[in-house]
Image 1 (cartoon, rainbow, N blue to C red):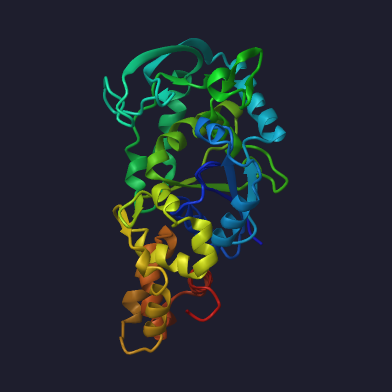
Image 2: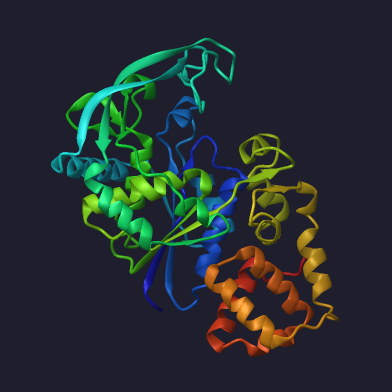
Length: 398
């Protein structure tokens, strides 16, 4: 085996991980492993059990279903973690202590619009007087928090953003990530989290913000080696969580003196029959349910072909049961001819970029005319064969 390489996916909320948005992350992570058949690639997936929505939903703390869905789609093995374990709490408090020693933590007042009906801060791009979720009255709420000052890390973050490799259909979102704010709120009051969470050391009224816990858990040592012992690191993410991965995670790397990510693979959003993935999951399109009904190969092909485009994609569930069988069976009958000398460099480019949408189209071309692969160098042919086998599955198309 070659050098150890770590691939991470965004921490999924315990109350809402079972959806096709998370499936896209898992698909890309599994593909990155398949594309490095000569390397020792570890995929790491952590469930966020301490965010406020999960706490209020009384989400099941067992990770059995999370692990089953994750390994089914990304491929086995996957290192499964939870932000609610004693190990995660102890590690996060170590990270906090390091930030404290660097003198970049301070207390202050957190002020934001609040809705008493929703019992939550209002998520709105502009100041509003009415809650967009329920129509209730909005007022400013003030609470004491801990804040992280980012200015001491500004030069490091700027240099890292200039040198990190950005990949994927939404890579531009990482390249144009805004400058970090001067202060980042990194704690919440115990009353808001109902006592759940990693306690702020020596401050019993506060728990560490779940976002900081998530960022710290990326870097946590594991039995498989973890972040610091890997030779290289790729973070898979959707464009909606770019700021966490271009600010907080590399900032913690700087604070701990460990290398930051080498690559960010960023994808666009998807919708399912016009709904966001979480809503679709509540309406019977959950990842676990679809896996049980249709199996991983059909889902992988459907998402690779239609979900990883150069723009946000709206998937139709009606395509899922039939797309893999219809396309792969039909393409394997032959007929269409392509120039191998033209096709090979384009396919190599797509393999290097881990562009799954284009790789899937390349698979169809190769199924129709296998001679197009004759011009591929041996190493590229091994990569293509590995990713084709992984995406398509070894069984007959249903």
